[in-house]
Image (cartoon, rainbow, N blue to C red; front, side, top):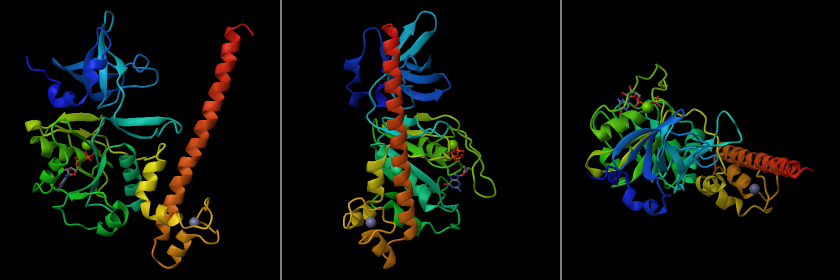
Length: 342
Ligand SMILES: Nc1nc2c(ncn2[C@@H]2O[C@H](COP(=O)(O)OP(=O)(O)OP(=O)(O)O)[C@@H](O)[C@H]2O)c(=O)[nH]1
Ligand SMILES: [Mg+2]
Ligand SMILES: [Zn+2]
């Protein structure tokens, strides 16, 4: 039988040589609570994904390369998650000081938005920071081009996307699909992220060529109904690569994304270099280059506000994390003293 893992990009990984004895290499294509679907050389299998087994705190996510071992009592389990080449992550919406990895080993992150609805610039900025922070190539995908555009998104996209490529698509007349495929290729993965109802699953279906994934009508206000509930990696026909569909995201908390933030706000970063004070907060300091650009009308003051808000969010997150690790260190040393009987 031919190796079923080959189309999943196994050739581009050295993982085969890193495997522990008695284990098998697999790629995670779908994760549900406590279980996941993986592709092994022999095909698709459902396995346990107990996060305790899977290397400390690292629970497997869609896109991961993992080691599978068979245990007598439970059957096949994920025994190790192999190092991730790239990862799309955000701050966990439920636990604000924990990173939530949405997908891994991605080559392109498509930030998807529908031309049928308004586009708040802050939302696009956050998604672009998330996309750039992943280590994959960012891409903006504007869907539903066949519908009459009630909202002129061009200005928003131009002011925010910078040098990120923008592709307009339609699953009705096929517009832009070839351009999307141009960013893919054998073994390459494009993850689609965006709000519910923007047409992520519809795009996957259009690229696959049949109705593989469920899609749903949007409500009157163009909002979606959260049809997709799991992250799923889908192989495209003709060795064209893979697409990773995700459930619509509401909250986009940033996680350790300072570098990506500076890239998305490159124009402001450049200006900040000319502020008189190195630690200028761009609020009321004399000699602030950003303030003077706002006053002369060169820079949108709202964009500056969003930049400083996101920067503060990241600083606050770092501080909480440092506090937590200091606390853990203290707890740890207390525990080891107890163990020694002190
Ligand atoms: N006219 C038109 N409708 C589209 C297009 N793409 C998607 N739609 C419609 O938009 C609605 C939502 O599409 P989905 O693909 O379910 O959206 P989604 O982003 O996967 O939504 P969630 O799974 O809830 O996150 C469906 O009614 C689709 O038929 C398009 O290019 N043109
Ligand atoms: Mg969907
Ligand atoms: Zn300044």
